Image 1 (cartoon, one colour):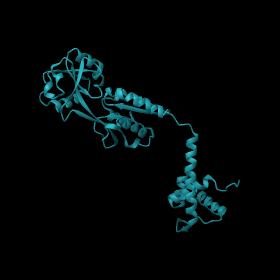
Image 2: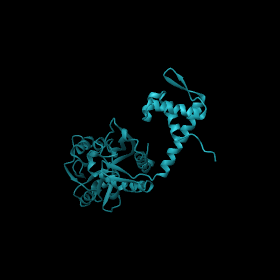
Image 3: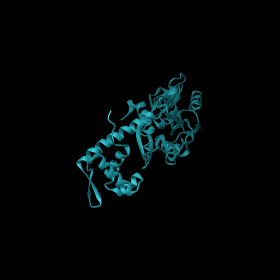
Image 4: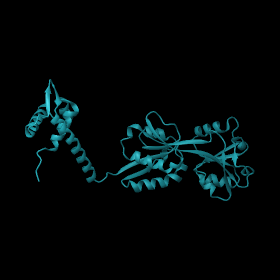
Length: 298
């Protein structure tokens, strides 16, 4: 088999000269002196017995032979890089994820399992203490992907996941359970048992849903199971996201009703920082989230 006289450093030289249009900038890119680059080019042209660049003033203009060599160099260097990637074991990576609603863990768990099966070198860590302000955690670099209903910021990229509607959970024996759909004003005389959200978020939801007539009493409970037990025992009624109400639908002592209001939904997105897009695991994880909700995608 014929042994080629071209070396990898020759290919890197021709690419640097083509990219930078002259010896000075090519030398800087290659971390060599100008004289070293000039001598290397002269030796390469002598070895090939071809003129690769015409000297035009202080610059270089690539010849037909130079263009042909550059085309081959690009292909070979690309293939060498791909070969190195295939040979090296995939470096373990960590992906930090936060969600603005703890009840999302019910559907997020199978997504995480499926993602890690397909990406065994990536470990997903849930940053639970970022739930109250996931976009702040994103900006501070404590989170890689946020699953949030808060509006993305200028420095973020986002993908739509789902519009999740609020539902009303009632004891089966409650007088309102006969209705298929409830209006916020139907709950004005009720004790409302809700998730332990930040006060400002609760106030915002309350203003949007109830205006000047909020329910007479509000009780905040940190876990869905506690809310359902209180409602089942006629302590009050609850408003919760549709995906959190899934457990209530499986119980004989509870009913779930639609909440009829233009404000009774939250738009959920996967959000990540624009300057983190090069982290290959982020797009893959976002696609896994989108695929989970695909039937609901707009």
